[in-house]
Length: 291
Image (cartoon, rainbow, N blue to C red; front, side):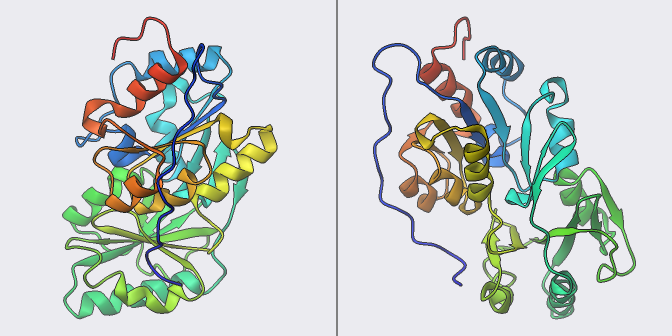
């Protein structure tokens, strides 16, 4: 299975000629999309979320971050919100699991050993073994843990990450250099049977082949009776590809990876220009929101 997919051709987005668009589900990536480059949530986020709640529109963060991190980030508005965590491998609402797709036993230890070999060869890389209860790492140096803490508020430093007693949802690898240079190519053998997704300039994730944000979005659509025409999705990187394909209202932020810009129906302002909230407010004609 290739590490990169060929994007779909650009399509047009439906326009709401009279009144607000009939949107019932809004799904957005976090880093590089909703959050600005300083990892800050946009101004007026809580006002917009309250207006969406009043209209019966479900707002759903979809991220490679763990559930605990997302729940903390959205604590003021988390009630009733669905969180697509671990790049779609774990979906939770109000603390109750909706779905999960753990790796089969033996896969995570193989990936950890691959990372150990890479590190021994001089690559500055570390593995984050992502379980339902916590994330587990062997590296305990300050720079690496600083990166881990951004996305995994519940994490533990362990002696042996091949011997974790937890349901493992994915293994994320952080490379201090360009992840596509050495780390991603080292995972070629796993790409034959699993999904290997570059989720940022320094991150690559290994998950079950069926586990991705798009599968989680389509499952929500089926369970809630929401159509792609009633779904709005925002993304910026390659791990957002499948969920963009699940929505008629699909947007790449202006700072998105070129392949994501080609896949999305439209391009909206960048993450540093509050593109997600500005697009939502315009399409749904939210009153009293100055963005």
